[in-house]
Length: 233
Image 1 (cartoon, rainbow, N blue to C red):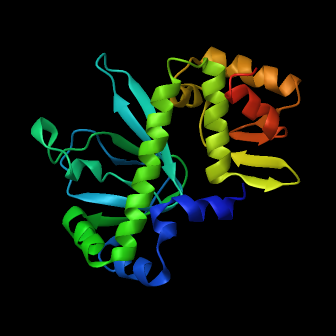
Image 2: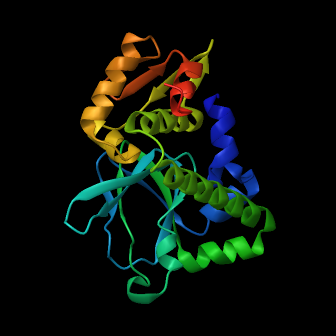
């Protein structure tokens, strides 16, 4: 579960070779975003996408009652903002979500048509994009299937394990995860309440499964957390 292993296995940018990275970088512009910066707003015109070179981004949508909900957390080479160029109908060419930098973010900004021309002309890059997109779709499908049959604590355990897999650092069976999210945001990401997150983390600390600090979780018993996620709490 080392960071190097998993980031290279999942993010589109990290799946590219040096030659492909250089070619794609030549088609766009690299920009740095400060923590908390809004990279784009839901509903605004969209002509370009972001390739996250470093950093984390929150995907935020506004509900029908006007509340903001965090739908996903992206980073480690993910492509974000690309769906606006693929949909049709009333939202064609419009952003489907707001993107907000969680910490410092460096992103490559590429026009949609240039990005797709790059994929068409580079078979290895096309395969990398399909692989990354397929993994994201599988993750989304898994989360949707979990929602009606799992408790909030189980979904929280699943999200922590996913974050550990993608962004954690393992040493001697202990996984350190810097989580740039508040408990409220963790609750939104897990489809549960903040009270459930607070209660679950306190319970797991008492049992020696995790240690927590500000925006930081240490998973001291990975097997124990997997048992919770697998409905055997």
